[in-house]
Amino acid sequence: MKTNEELIHHFYTCFKNKDFKGMQECYADHATFNDEAFRNLNATQVRSMWEMLIKSGKDLRLEYNHVQADENTGTAEWVAHYTFSATGKKVVNKIKASFVFENGKIVKHEDSFSFYKWSSQALGLPGILLGWTDFLKNKIRKRAAENLRLFMAAIT
Image 1: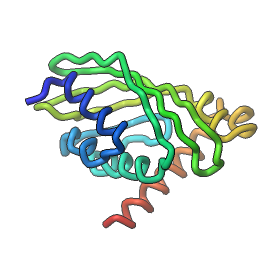
Image 2: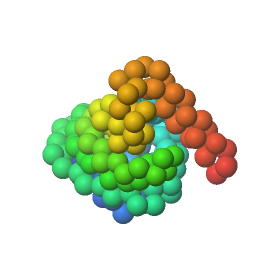
Image 3: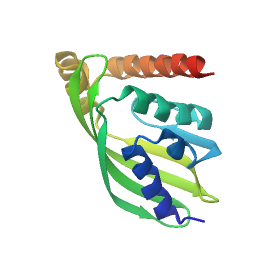
Image 4: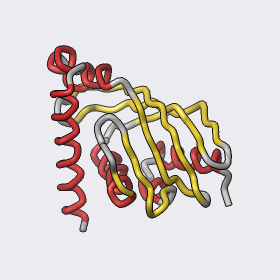
């Protein structure tokens, strides 16, 4: 069995190689996921989210580092470079990930990043003006949830 540190390296190596199936296998069947856009995802949803993001991220490129893990928890930092499909704007998003593990699988995954910095890049002027508001956060979260729902409906 892989150590949890090796599991994190495997997860991000799969991500770099756009191997969503390899990423999906890292999650336990009762896993949860949260970030600034996707909230309270279950294992099925998070697996589909990575597939959707990889398939839609034509120019997606990432780096990761500072991987640390023990028998229960882990952390990593990663940077995603991509074009935000809704606006065509380039984004460089710096993300801190935290993990909880059980039996060699991820059971809880949380990514945190500056929503304001992200929205300023991804949305341009509207993000600069409104990126600090709950209004814009909630609008982006609803859109992300709907995009994921539509993607999952299309692949089943």
